[in-house]
Image 1: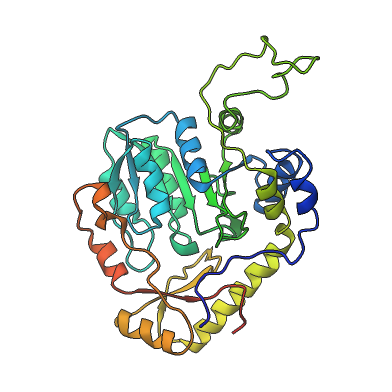
Image 2: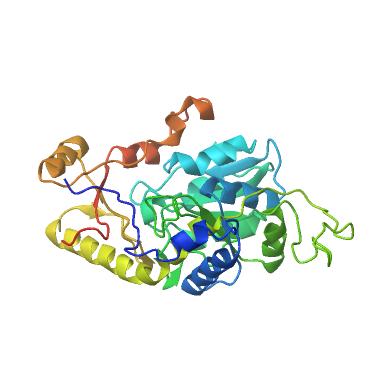
Length: 348
């Protein structure tokens, strides 16, 4: 059966053995090269990699100065990996409803959920399909609330011809976990709208240390180098960075293969409703459709050799997030959404 997800790995990783025996395994040359290649691809110079996607989220929350009990408006129709870090950071989750035709946050619902305690809008772009970027960002600007584009599954997706991470949103979070593109086995990244927040995150990512001044001329830790802010150990290793960097030249071709697969699905299934919208270009990580007979169609596609799935369970179903909230858009979308394989590993 053709799988819905599959990790990508380059055929050759010629430098891997050298790195493993180099004695330099933590963030360094390859970490910087990977970041530069990501910046060039996205079109934004203010980007940092992290050792995990969850780390990227919590680093962004720390830079924003969020604290225990602050409210964050987010979508339950997303990966659990998106919302758990918000909860473990101590934020109060406020579920907004989604557009049942797109799977992404409804701007009207977001606006309705805003209170004086709202400190963040966490905007998930469902399964690589871009949401209402301008509308959500406009709401954030109107109320003075920062917006994070949650691109856990949306690296390589575009809005109005620009890649996610280069749209003027305050922060954009990417995942490079095994089944993402690029795949660093585990890892993430943050792109920033503001250079000052980038500079702050650069230090916080590495225990608040300015490495250019941390050691004196004798290689000893310098008492002149003060640590003035809290920080984490969130840098990406050289091994993960090298694996990610080694894939960057392949990304355009892989995305093109996924786009072509999605186009073939559209031709073969002309009568189905899809999540594609004007001014958006999904990364076609999966091909999403809306079915009135979800289970029947899912099993039918599986019988034909294509692993089909609903991918995510609405996160408001999980008791860890508190009392279940009924959201009609979420229920309607979840009852209809199906994903078909559209990845680089096969040709339609």
